[in-house]
Image (cartoon, rainbow, N blue to C red; front, side):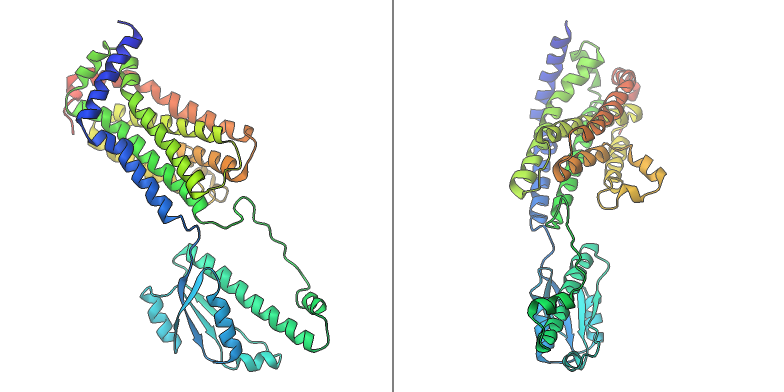
Length: 392
């Protein structure tokens, strides 16, 4: 019996198992689709908007009301409460009802008209980094804009033209250009990390499950018999349906991100598709390695889950790798997710030349796809030896 005949026998057997056990299509298709749609809806807004804040207006003047209106008009802030003292604001912040407190001092308008320096205080909740960043930026920009406007009006009253007053009020210009994500869209870097993370988790757990259940249910002998005792056709025939399904899920993931949500795609779409395919193969190979070494379904699922979750922490998306210690950077290289993230940032966000992403694809192939294949003799041993069967 030839190689293709053996592989076809195993493939036919695996299709029968997929039809008999609903958990297989659930993990292959239903749960990934639900998770992709979940994150697309969650981060579809892009940036946090209309976060509730409180204003303590101790001046109650026309200028203080104007400043309050300007703050309320910012994208991030929504003035939801007019508080009477700071203690009330502290209580509301501790209860999670507001994200910031803006304090406008007494004699605010009087000090401005008399050219006396005055200070507007802002107390921003720092427990949420996203809220802190967006609110802090909007509040600071609003107060600076208000202050500049007051200076310009004062200078115009002294006889200067508007251009002269503006140049005197703003003698130094800070010309900032945000590259690759000029919209400061929070979802454009979170969705391309959370969606592949879900694809990664379902891929590795599905791989461990479909092989581990052969051992747990003592059907590994039937699996190997369908392949004529050869491990290569046994493994290839078993994994073809799951590789195809997870690759289609990666295509769906990219379609949702780049077509539906609108994540920028400045580089090569073909390279991102190839990276998705290698990403799936990498985590399948790692799943095969784990279950081959441990030959225990429950323990293998636990280790695979823990390994998957750690990948996001060391990917460098939320805390840059260049700011980490060398040994942490080295540790991050044991996860295919790190290399996939590099490809995404280079191709989707930066639009870098393809040559800069080739080495990431190469490492994914050499380290995570080819090296785990060294465990195939071990996989054949546990699949043909009854002492490794019926373990939990």
